[in-house]
Amino acid sequence: MKPEERIDKDLRIFEENIQPVEELNLSDKEVLVKDMAKRYYEDTKYYLKIGDSLTSFACIAYAHGLLDSIRIMYNLNEE
Image (cartoon, rainbow, N blue to C red):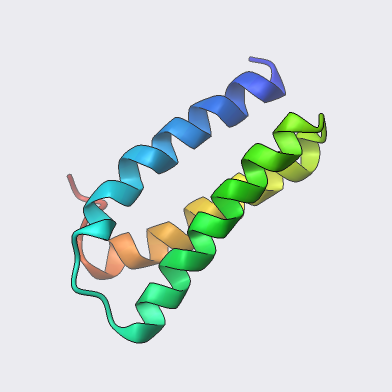
């Protein structure tokens, strides 16, 4: 799999995983973490667009980590 294909796949996974989180009643700090994850998701798309797949992959990996921290707290990873 080419890096760009992997990043596209990770973007789709993030889009699926953020949906249930958007429906939660999050604390203020959790909202900050969710919003940061979404900003890294947007950064992923930007760096992919300009051809910097290494930075793009780093961004989506970090976005997933932030999002997963919330999903773990709310038992959303067990679906």
